[in-house]
Length: 164
Image 1: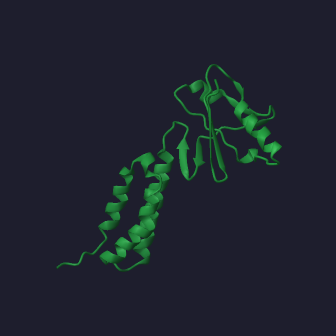
Image 2: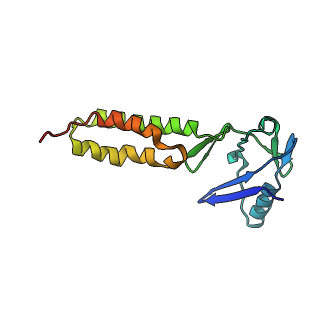
Image 3: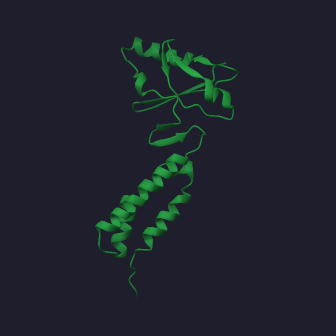
Protein backbone atom coordinates (compact mmCIF):
# COMPACT_ATOMS: atom_id res chain seq x y z
CA UNK A 1 0.00 0.00 0.00
CA UNK A 2 1.48 3.33 -1.09
CA UNK A 3 1.21 5.94 1.65
CA UNK A 4 2.17 8.95 -0.46
CA UNK A 5 0.40 12.20 -1.22
CA UNK A 6 1.43 14.57 -4.00
CA UNK A 7 0.25 18.16 -4.29
CA UNK A 8 1.28 20.92 -6.68
CA UNK A 9 0.64 24.62 -6.87
CA UNK A 10 2.26 26.80 -9.53
CA UNK A 11 5.91 25.69 -9.55
CA UNK A 12 5.91 24.10 -6.07
CA UNK A 13 5.42 20.38 -5.62
CA UNK A 14 5.06 18.68 -2.26
CA UNK A 15 5.30 14.96 -1.69
CA UNK A 16 4.26 13.51 1.67
CA UNK A 17 5.17 9.95 2.50
CA UNK A 18 4.75 7.95 5.69
CA UNK A 19 7.78 6.01 6.93
CA UNK A 20 7.08 3.02 9.14
CA UNK A 21 9.34 0.54 10.81
CA UNK A 22 13.04 0.62 11.59
CA UNK A 23 14.83 2.19 8.63
CA UNK A 24 18.18 3.92 8.37
CA UNK A 25 18.34 4.45 4.63
CA UNK A 26 15.21 5.04 2.62
CA UNK A 27 14.74 5.21 -1.12
CA UNK A 28 11.43 6.85 -1.91
CA UNK A 29 9.68 5.06 -4.76
CA UNK A 30 7.25 7.97 -5.36
CA UNK A 31 10.15 10.43 -5.75
CA UNK A 32 11.81 8.04 -8.18
CA UNK A 33 8.55 7.85 -10.16
CA UNK A 34 8.32 11.65 -10.30
CA UNK A 35 11.95 11.88 -11.41
CA UNK A 36 11.31 9.32 -14.18
CA UNK A 37 8.23 11.27 -15.30
CA UNK A 38 10.22 14.52 -15.38
CA UNK A 39 12.99 12.96 -17.46
CA UNK A 40 10.45 11.49 -19.89
CA UNK A 41 8.97 15.00 -20.30
CA UNK A 42 12.35 16.76 -20.64
CA UNK A 43 12.08 18.34 -17.19
CA UNK A 44 14.54 18.33 -14.37
CA UNK A 45 14.11 18.77 -10.62
CA UNK A 46 16.66 20.79 -8.72
CA UNK A 47 17.83 18.56 -5.86
CA UNK A 48 19.51 21.58 -4.23
CA UNK A 49 16.06 23.13 -3.72
CA UNK A 50 14.54 19.89 -2.44
CA UNK A 51 13.96 19.59 1.28
CA UNK A 52 12.86 16.85 3.60
CA UNK A 53 10.92 17.50 6.77
CA UNK A 54 10.74 14.57 9.14
CA UNK A 55 7.99 14.92 11.71
CA UNK A 56 5.86 12.75 13.90
CA UNK A 57 5.82 11.14 17.33
CA UNK A 58 8.38 8.43 16.53
CA UNK A 59 11.83 9.88 17.15
CA UNK A 60 13.81 7.13 15.38
CA UNK A 61 12.75 7.95 11.79
CA UNK A 62 13.07 11.67 12.59
CA UNK A 63 16.67 11.40 13.71
CA UNK A 64 18.17 8.55 11.76
CA UNK A 65 16.65 8.26 8.29
CA UNK A 66 18.31 9.51 5.14
CA UNK A 67 16.48 10.03 1.86
CA UNK A 68 18.18 8.84 -1.31
CA UNK A 69 16.84 9.79 -4.73
CA UNK A 70 17.76 7.39 -7.50
CA UNK A 71 20.25 5.77 -5.15
CA UNK A 72 22.86 8.56 -5.36
CA UNK A 73 21.51 11.96 -4.35
CA UNK A 74 20.84 12.40 -0.65
CA UNK A 75 18.34 15.04 0.44
CA UNK A 76 19.30 16.37 3.82
CA UNK A 77 16.62 17.02 6.45
CA UNK A 78 15.59 20.51 7.49
CA UNK A 79 14.05 21.56 10.83
CA UNK A 80 11.69 23.98 9.03
CA UNK A 81 10.19 23.81 5.54
CA UNK A 82 8.48 26.73 3.83
CA UNK A 83 5.61 25.85 1.51
CA UNK A 84 3.43 28.52 -0.10
CA UNK A 85 4.61 31.10 2.41
CA UNK A 86 3.87 28.97 5.48
CA UNK A 87 6.69 27.66 7.66
CA UNK A 88 6.14 24.22 9.16
CA UNK A 89 8.38 23.01 12.00
CA UNK A 90 9.57 19.45 12.42
CA UNK A 91 7.34 19.09 15.47
CA UNK A 92 4.36 19.70 13.11
CA UNK A 93 3.60 23.13 14.53
CA UNK A 94 3.67 26.62 13.08
CA UNK A 95 5.64 28.27 15.92
CA UNK A 96 8.25 29.87 13.66
CA UNK A 97 5.57 31.04 11.22
CA UNK A 98 3.53 32.63 14.04
CA UNK A 99 6.62 34.36 15.41
CA UNK A 100 7.71 35.65 11.98
CA UNK A 101 4.21 36.82 11.02
CA UNK A 102 3.67 38.62 14.32
CA UNK A 103 7.05 40.32 14.07
CA UNK A 104 6.43 41.39 10.49
CA UNK A 105 3.08 42.92 11.48
CA UNK A 106 4.68 44.71 14.45
CA UNK A 107 7.40 46.09 12.16
CA UNK A 108 4.80 47.31 9.66
CA UNK A 109 2.80 48.95 12.47
CA UNK A 110 5.96 50.65 13.72
CA UNK A 111 6.77 51.83 10.20
CA UNK A 112 3.27 53.27 9.76
CA UNK A 113 3.42 55.09 13.11
CA UNK A 114 6.87 56.54 12.33
CA UNK A 115 6.02 57.54 8.76
CA UNK A 116 2.58 59.07 9.19
CA UNK A 117 2.24 61.89 11.71
CA UNK A 118 -1.55 61.92 11.57
CA UNK A 119 -3.37 59.80 14.12
CA UNK A 120 -6.72 60.56 12.55
CA UNK A 121 -9.11 57.60 12.69
CA UNK A 122 -9.64 57.41 8.92
CA UNK A 123 -5.90 57.51 8.13
CA UNK A 124 -5.00 54.94 10.79
CA UNK A 125 -7.75 52.49 9.85
CA UNK A 126 -6.82 52.77 6.17
CA UNK A 127 -3.20 51.97 7.02
CA UNK A 128 -4.30 49.05 9.18
CA UNK A 129 -6.57 47.57 6.51
CA UNK A 130 -4.14 48.09 3.62
CA UNK A 131 -0.76 47.29 5.18
CA UNK A 132 -0.94 45.36 8.43
CA UNK A 133 -4.10 43.27 8.51
CA UNK A 134 -3.34 41.38 5.25
CA UNK A 135 -0.06 40.17 6.77
CA UNK A 136 -1.87 38.79 9.80
CA UNK A 137 -4.74 37.35 7.76
CA UNK A 138 -2.66 35.24 5.34
CA UNK A 139 -3.36 31.60 6.27
CA UNK A 140 -4.29 32.51 9.83
CA UNK A 141 -6.70 29.57 9.87
CA UNK A 142 -3.63 27.42 10.41
CA UNK A 143 -2.36 29.18 13.49
CA UNK A 144 -5.40 30.89 14.96
CA UNK A 145 -5.08 34.64 14.97
CA UNK A 146 -4.63 34.97 18.73
CA UNK A 147 -1.45 37.01 18.15
CA UNK A 148 -3.39 39.37 15.90
CA UNK A 149 -5.14 41.08 18.81
CA UNK A 150 -1.81 41.96 20.42
CA UNK A 151 -0.64 43.92 17.35
CA UNK A 152 -4.13 45.29 16.73
CA UNK A 153 -4.41 46.70 20.27
CA UNK A 154 -0.97 48.31 20.03
CA UNK A 155 -1.87 49.98 16.74
CA UNK A 156 -5.42 51.08 17.54
CA UNK A 157 -4.37 52.67 20.83
CA UNK A 158 -2.54 55.24 18.75
CA UNK A 159 -5.73 56.43 17.01
CA UNK A 160 -7.15 59.81 17.92
CA UNK A 161 -10.90 59.54 17.86
CA UNK A 162 -12.99 62.60 17.04
CA UNK A 163 -15.29 63.52 19.89
CA UNK A 164 -18.88 64.45 18.95
